[in-house]
Image (cartoon, rainbow, N blue to C red; front, side, top):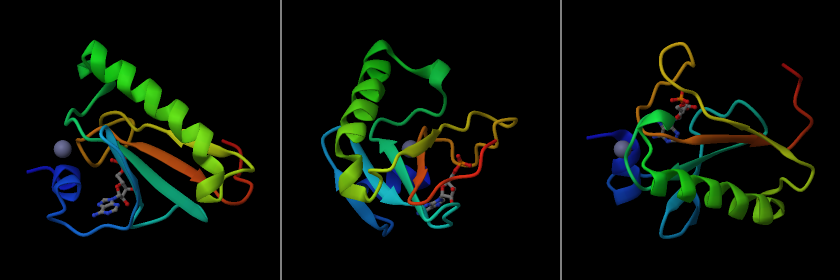
Length: 109
Ligand code: AMP
Ligand code: ZN
């Protein structure tokens, strides 16, 4: 069973900061920025090219919703969104998730 599915079910502990019907948002266990959150859709799929149309609509809505409440998470100054995809993208967990980084000015790419 996938680690993020287990976190969603509450079978593995996590530092959850938000939950709704479609997602959970947790603190990354190995933060790469002052604030490093993971927005995890509850539906299990690994890659963007595996999305159903509903999955795609849901992910878009979740990003919009997050952007409107970013200040609640200490991200009023902005944030960076990263979705790692596949081997070359450095994806380690095969359950699609959105990295949200911020809390201080990030270095450019
Ligand atoms: P990715 O390389 O995009 O698949 O990112 C996986 C991310 O999940 C990494 O940043 C890990 O630090 C994070 N991670 C893995 N296991 C956990 C966990 N149990 N709780 C919180 N974050 C985790
Ligand atoms: Zn999963």
